[in-house]
Length: 448
Image 1: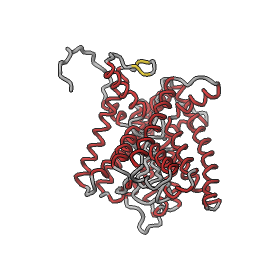
Image 2: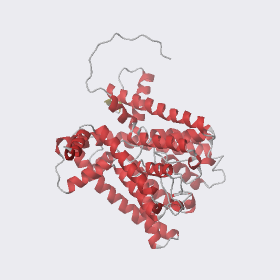
Image 3: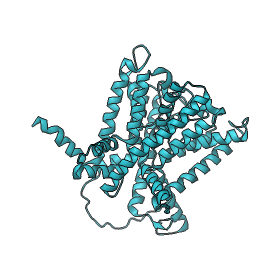
């Protein structure tokens, strides 16, 4: 009987993809914590504390980038390799990687396995999901290979030796494409102000990583067969473009006479662009966040909450959720009974999911913010920024992460985990399997 327990447990998890997703991330975080807790992971005498090892492992697996120890100086090469491995696994997802390996060796997933993959990948058909998994892994490796080659050349031009340039390129390519935001430089990308090719390459990597693998697959096939982009990828690309342009314009306007007042136009536009795309949800920065105005911080918080595309390496409530909410508001303004977006009607189920996701996300973030405000001495704007950065798995910080108490670090750790797996995943766990159909009378209330 005992030898059958692992198989029974595995079959039970396959039938409940939400449990499988939560447990796979939790198990990876636990393993990463144990590795980073080893004295070998840091040159610091005594090693990392348990809470710092847990925080760093969670930040890496949840591809956040918030740090309580400097990655480049307070982690050894072994520790840095552990971090980048956790980033890669967390970015792709342990389910994606394990399924790809199973497919590569010719293993049969079975109906339960295909159903679990279908649910976690967000595809309507399991065969599409399996096809997407192959594309995800092979496409990721190809994009990261190109990124490594380009960044190795650029880091070498900057002044690093060939070996160091390659090492830096591998670490930052994986971190950028997986939208993690971890950097081996204590100032992230600030030092490369005079060599914009490096931050621009980094930004292209995390923009591609944030589009979502299904969108990248659709782009690939559309370009290959010279067809028009399908509906869903077209919406994601249009919304991404709008957020990049509007975010860049707002940050540039708010900082033109503030933080960017002594810069040349090209430099200020570069910083504005980078700080507009990095909150969704890369975590790198080319300019110190704490020197930016309150208005820009609000814009960045808004972008961090939105995040990037579904099925991507990014966090947040996702760009499609924001599009659905905007469409609902626009329909109310226009007095329409149906919500229509680009010639397609948005279903009530999709609207309910979007509203529930935004509502639950705000509730969770504000609860953690209230808790931090009660136990931490830092200004509210810094704690609010930290909370949204953790939930959006962004990694941008105003410099208070390492100064948090153990309770504060634990709260941020939990928020990073919730932000990565998604609040809706937790809602699925408590959702009843059987729906009782009851017709209720309409409620009559005054709204607004």
